[in-house]
Amino acid sequence: MAKRAQETPKALEAFEQYWALGPSRSLRALADATGIQLSQLGDWSSKFDWQYRVMQRQREEVAAARVAAKKEAAALGRRRLRNAQLLQEAALTIFAKANIAEMEEDAREYLDTALKMMTEGMRAERLELGEATETISLAPPKPINAMSDEELRDYIELLEQDAA
Image (cartoon, rainbow, N blue to C red; front, top):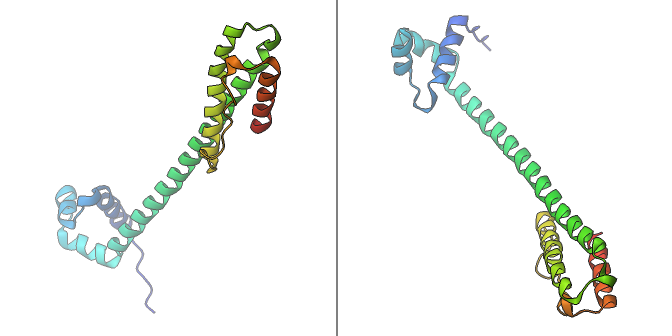
């Protein structure tokens, strides 16, 4: 098996310039850009397998782009999941701070916003985790402003258990 010739610095530099030409690269374009004879570039290209090296670099770039895209998608997924959990925590805080025993009946409709926050936070969390989003329902048995204190406490407890 014949030993492969060592690429000279000048040939390596020419290859790097060839690579930098991008998808429209050609030996003729390289000869025009560098002033190196086309025949010399052809010899180097053949001798040092430039076409194969270009394909290898392209594969490496594609692989690196896939890895970067997967990392970015994972980071976005983690951020969406955390936002969904924060939405649920905010809703639970609202429910916890709402002094239900002393709350006026008409003020209970403000709890609908917290309920929507909880519901959407749970839905978004399940969606991010690949779980069912439509088959699980924590809709209140009746409108919140029509619930008694005890019914409302029971419902909030159910939401807290499901969020845990």
